Image (cartoon, rainbow, N blue to C red; front, side, top):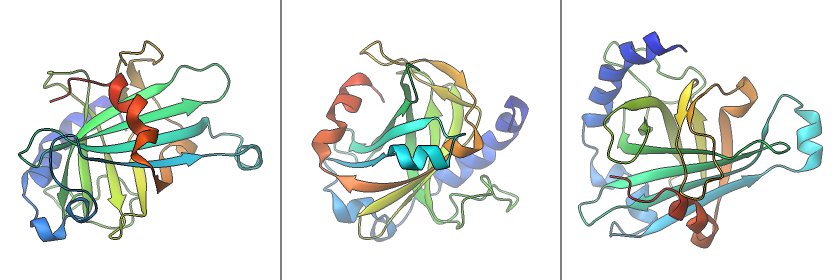
Length: 202
């Protein structure tokens, strides 16, 4: 999906995100307390056998962090994507809100065709800290019991510069094998380096 399509979708997507969800419907509130610094981490590490079966997939390891920012119930989602060989890390972050129509624009069309449902977390990708410029979007399907999450990435999408200097910032194009990730919940400490690499987000 090109830049022009992103611009067309931006306002409908914001409208979908802007509709507040009933707290009882939001899975995140059931698995981690909505207070500053509380977080939950999801991970997937792909072994050699999997990568041989999927030669087009570049991602070897991916982390997803849900972290509350402040005490107003807002949270930021951070993503770290490790790729084959010596390719730099890709960091992504988004301001996400749970909605029953996360995957629908104002006209009723699906935003990401591969996403199999409507409800979920609709996320506007951030380009840098304290910037209002939008860098694409992604969707997250968080299991009701909090044991797993499935991440759906749009492409192209903006990657962020990490404070650790290990990442490649700017617009990136993700191949079809690097847009859907089924993750399992892990110890929050697994996402600490990711959260420190993307500090100061709104």
